[in-house]
Image (cartoon, rainbow, N blue to C red; front, side, top):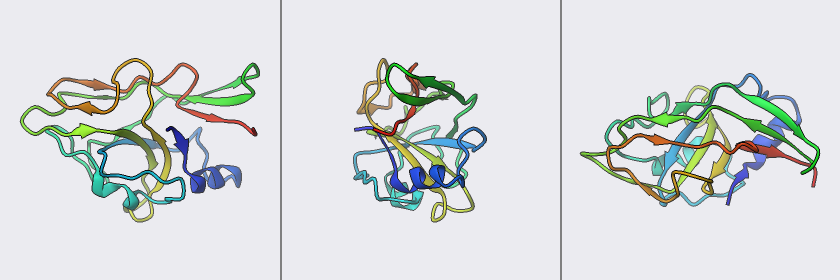
Length: 155
Protein backbone atom coordinates (compact mmCIF):
# COMPACT_ATOMS: atom_id res chain seq x y z
CA UNK A 1 0.00 0.00 0.00
CA UNK A 2 1.82 3.09 -1.26
CA UNK A 3 0.22 6.47 -0.72
CA UNK A 4 0.74 10.19 -0.33
CA UNK A 5 -0.43 11.53 3.02
CA UNK A 6 -3.53 13.76 2.81
CA UNK A 7 -1.90 16.77 4.44
CA UNK A 8 1.10 16.59 2.10
CA UNK A 9 -1.24 16.47 -0.92
CA UNK A 10 -3.05 19.49 0.48
CA UNK A 11 0.24 21.39 0.95
CA UNK A 12 1.27 20.58 -2.65
CA UNK A 13 -2.13 21.64 -4.02
CA UNK A 14 -2.07 24.99 -2.23
CA UNK A 15 1.52 25.67 -3.30
CA UNK A 16 3.06 25.54 0.19
CA UNK A 17 5.13 22.43 -0.60
CA UNK A 18 7.25 22.63 -3.73
CA UNK A 19 8.46 19.11 -4.47
CA UNK A 20 11.00 20.42 -6.99
CA UNK A 21 12.93 22.26 -4.30
CA UNK A 22 11.97 20.61 -0.99
CA UNK A 23 14.75 18.69 0.77
CA UNK A 24 12.80 15.45 1.14
CA UNK A 25 14.24 12.58 3.15
CA UNK A 26 13.42 8.90 3.63
CA UNK A 27 13.29 7.19 6.99
CA UNK A 28 12.94 3.48 7.61
CA UNK A 29 10.12 2.19 9.81
CA UNK A 30 9.18 -1.15 11.32
CA UNK A 31 5.82 -2.91 11.44
CA UNK A 32 5.15 -1.08 14.73
CA UNK A 33 4.02 1.90 12.64
CA UNK A 34 0.39 1.60 11.55
CA UNK A 35 0.19 3.78 8.44
CA UNK A 36 -2.71 6.19 8.13
CA UNK A 37 -3.24 8.72 5.33
CA UNK A 38 -4.59 11.11 7.97
CA UNK A 39 -1.27 11.34 9.84
CA UNK A 40 0.27 14.76 9.27
CA UNK A 41 3.60 14.87 11.06
CA UNK A 42 6.65 12.63 11.51
CA UNK A 43 6.01 12.32 15.25
CA UNK A 44 3.17 9.94 14.30
CA UNK A 45 5.70 7.47 12.86
CA UNK A 46 9.03 8.21 14.51
CA UNK A 47 8.48 5.86 17.48
CA UNK A 48 8.61 2.98 14.97
CA UNK A 49 11.77 4.19 13.25
CA UNK A 50 14.29 1.44 12.55
CA UNK A 51 16.91 0.66 15.18
CA UNK A 52 19.98 -0.86 13.52
CA UNK A 53 23.73 -0.52 13.43
CA UNK A 54 24.75 2.44 11.21
CA UNK A 55 21.24 3.95 11.28
CA UNK A 56 20.88 7.07 13.39
CA UNK A 57 17.18 7.87 13.57
CA UNK A 58 15.34 10.83 14.94
CA UNK A 59 15.13 14.42 13.76
CA UNK A 60 18.29 15.31 11.85
CA UNK A 61 19.62 11.76 12.24
CA UNK A 62 22.03 10.52 9.60
CA UNK A 63 19.84 7.46 9.02
CA UNK A 64 17.29 9.59 7.23
CA UNK A 65 18.58 9.73 3.66
CA UNK A 66 18.15 12.83 1.51
CA UNK A 67 16.35 12.26 -1.79
CA UNK A 68 18.40 13.92 -4.52
CA UNK A 69 17.99 14.82 -8.18
CA UNK A 70 14.21 15.27 -8.40
CA UNK A 71 12.91 14.78 -11.94
CA UNK A 72 9.29 15.34 -12.92
CA UNK A 73 7.80 13.73 -16.01
CA UNK A 74 4.38 13.90 -17.61
CA UNK A 75 2.97 10.45 -18.35
CA UNK A 76 0.07 10.93 -20.77
CA UNK A 77 -0.36 7.18 -21.27
CA UNK A 78 -1.18 6.66 -17.59
CA UNK A 79 -2.68 10.14 -17.05
CA UNK A 80 -0.40 11.27 -14.26
CA UNK A 81 2.68 13.24 -13.29
CA UNK A 82 5.61 11.29 -11.88
CA UNK A 83 8.39 12.37 -9.55
CA UNK A 84 11.58 10.36 -9.51
CA UNK A 85 14.75 10.64 -7.41
CA UNK A 86 18.13 8.92 -7.36
CA UNK A 87 18.12 5.66 -5.38
CA UNK A 88 19.10 6.33 -1.73
CA UNK A 89 21.54 3.88 -0.11
CA UNK A 90 22.16 3.02 3.52
CA UNK A 91 25.70 1.69 3.97
CA UNK A 92 26.38 -1.42 6.10
CA UNK A 93 22.90 -1.27 7.61
CA UNK A 94 22.57 -3.57 10.59
CA UNK A 95 25.00 -6.26 11.65
CA UNK A 96 25.57 -5.93 15.39
CA UNK A 97 22.01 -4.61 15.90
CA UNK A 98 19.37 -5.61 13.35
CA UNK A 99 15.78 -4.63 12.73
CA UNK A 100 13.12 -5.51 10.18
CA UNK A 101 12.17 -2.67 7.86
CA UNK A 102 8.51 -2.64 6.92
CA UNK A 103 8.37 0.56 4.86
CA UNK A 104 10.08 3.67 3.56
CA UNK A 105 8.53 6.94 4.74
CA UNK A 106 9.20 10.12 2.74
CA UNK A 107 9.23 13.26 4.87
CA UNK A 108 10.17 16.91 5.00
CA UNK A 109 12.10 17.81 8.16
CA UNK A 110 11.32 21.29 9.49
CA UNK A 111 12.45 22.01 13.06
CA UNK A 112 11.35 18.91 15.04
CA UNK A 113 9.50 15.67 14.28
CA UNK A 114 6.38 17.33 15.70
CA UNK A 115 6.24 19.82 12.79
CA UNK A 116 8.04 17.82 10.09
CA UNK A 117 5.66 16.78 7.33
CA UNK A 118 4.90 13.19 6.38
CA UNK A 119 4.83 13.06 2.56
CA UNK A 120 4.50 9.44 1.41
CA UNK A 121 4.40 5.88 2.68
CA UNK A 122 6.06 3.23 0.49
CA UNK A 123 5.86 -0.46 1.36
CA UNK A 124 5.53 -1.90 -2.12
CA UNK A 125 8.67 -1.77 -4.22
CA UNK A 126 9.90 -3.40 -7.37
CA UNK A 127 13.29 -5.08 -7.43
CA UNK A 128 15.28 -5.12 -4.24
CA UNK A 129 14.78 -4.84 -1.44
CA UNK A 130 11.58 -6.71 -1.01
CA UNK A 131 9.78 -5.65 2.13
CA UNK A 132 9.78 -6.56 4.94
CA UNK A 133 13.59 -6.49 4.95
CA UNK A 134 15.79 -7.75 7.80
CA UNK A 135 19.01 -5.76 8.11
CA UNK A 136 22.18 -7.89 8.07
CA UNK A 137 25.06 -5.41 7.80
CA UNK A 138 24.82 -5.22 4.02
CA UNK A 139 24.15 -2.06 2.03
CA UNK A 140 20.47 -1.32 1.46
CA UNK A 141 19.46 0.56 -1.69
CA UNK A 142 15.90 1.69 -2.18
CA UNK A 143 15.29 1.24 -5.90
CA UNK A 144 13.07 4.12 -6.96
CA UNK A 145 10.73 2.92 -9.73
CA UNK A 146 11.31 4.33 -13.21
CA UNK A 147 7.69 5.50 -13.18
CA UNK A 148 8.39 7.61 -10.11
CA UNK A 149 8.42 7.34 -6.37
CA UNK A 150 5.48 9.75 -6.17
CA UNK A 151 2.69 9.84 -8.74
CA UNK A 152 -0.02 12.45 -9.04
CA UNK A 153 -3.25 12.12 -10.98
CA UNK A 154 -6.74 13.54 -10.87
CA UNK A 155 -8.39 10.15 -11.06
